[in-house]
Amino acid sequence: MFYAGMALKLLIGLAALVIVTRILGKKHMSQVTPFDFVYALILGGMVEETIYHADHTIPQMIFSITVWGILIYTVEKLTQKVDWLRGPLKGSTQVLIKDGKISIKELERANLELEQLRSLLRQKDVFSLREVKYVFLETNGEISVLKYQKSSAVKEDGEEQEVEEIEPAILVVDEGKIHEHNLKAVEKDREWLMEGLKKEGITDIKDIYYAEWSASHGFFIKTYDHCISV
Image (spheres, rainbow, N blue to C red):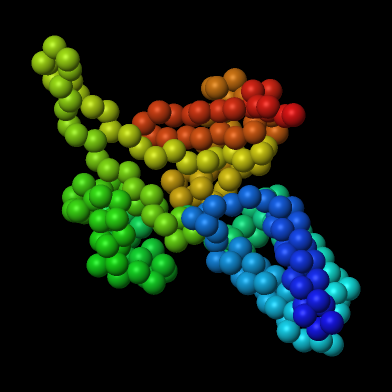
């Protein structure tokens, strides 16, 4: 009877975890943030406690998983809608190298030594800092690298042509809301953004699903009319 009860708890626990995980959304392991790791760890702990303790019943397990799932789902939705909550709860992207210059302050914030950064770069097939224009530390602990473009490239006819340097694009509007943090990072303000959007024919910020801006290519805008809604 004991083993049958344990098997039933395992089955129900597995089903509950799968349901909660599906509701919270699909993510690859490489996309998991520290916040995601913590909630998954606690979910697993709830099931484990119920399986190995006879006084923990199946209804108690389902109740605790349900309440925890609702809490996490609420937090996920809040971080999508409320800008200032996203950073503290989910983390934010850090610029470790900007325009070829290493940010000592950001390295210290990330608790990274320079040699650790160089090790991460080597895993991206970058073996010298002189190749690097930008390095972003993503919320999942991975780095994204933008290298300097070669000064010239050879056409098929043998002639050389200049290669334009690419600047990283930043998200300035997200689901009809101005991304203040990103504007501040590139030393721009709301007035500059609104003026730039007017030149692109946009007068209402709420019409924009997302808008990117880069120093090399300017604005790239998609309104809700240009997105698939169903």
